[in-house]
Length: 450
Image (cartoon, rainbow, N blue to C red):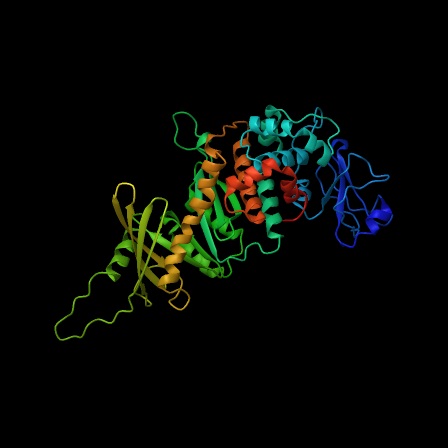
């Protein structure tokens, strides 16, 4: 074993994990003192007093004196981060370590299953693969009820969200895009009978990368306006452009974003009637006053057309700069008017709408065409995140009512979409079919950095 690992040239660290022995050990090409080695315990607590040891990485199955039930993964992988989760179950009667169950659930969700029953059956049909690659010493997988209970009671969802945020922040190339979209979503399967409010989650999303940066729950006694400042404090806004629906067009949030080094681009609707009326006046037809010349205007207009989803669309955006004192809104630099016209190919029906907005971006930072693209980018969170969770991952139809299971499942759905985006496949159903047929392609997304 030692000679084999020492022959590999990659200067990485690995961990050999024994899932059912409830502990993991670090292996090196050199002899390591057990008291000072870097180790993870199945108590899911990272040892605080240790001496880091450089490891040799190997993509081959260890042989020789290596234990058969040892699982190899990198210490910078998703699996290593999941091992930091505190298991809130009592030790008595625990058959599956928390990290192992999460790996199996993530594998099944990558492979196309959404609910506990489907996940358990998917795992059972791939028991040979799990025994070989996860080193299971028993040819059994968790029962659907076990999966539901673990997701509902064993996991601190706040810690899970925090660990996943830190994990993706540690990866190279994450968070390089400029546009940041913020929006909320209610998990409809959590709405009690006769009520209208269920678990509501507010997410920060990067449309260009297809990644969820962070997600927090909105208390039933609050709304997104209260929680938005908190979630924005959790990310680096330097150089970012934050977009959101009209609900987030608030003075305090606008100031917070600009003071943090970013910019905002809001749509303005009836929730800000005075601001909307003031913006509309910027685009009223100019009236010449006798004895005076024509008013000077820097109005700029751009038009774009495209087709898709069974319709033709024409978007026309007019933008005007705002001088100091012209608009009672903090940090405003430009206002815009967006007119959208749709023609449906199926029946020729037409639909039109006009949207007004305000941004802290100056004309030098964003011209009319760039503002049009920024407004299109907002819909990335609807199409790239909410639609995929609702339709592709069937989040609203997956009823898991034990404890925090619904919210944990939503967090895992974000994780699955993030992993698929990092894998490089844009069409999620295609990726899930591929991973279902070849789970060996999905496992490295968990056991190695992506």
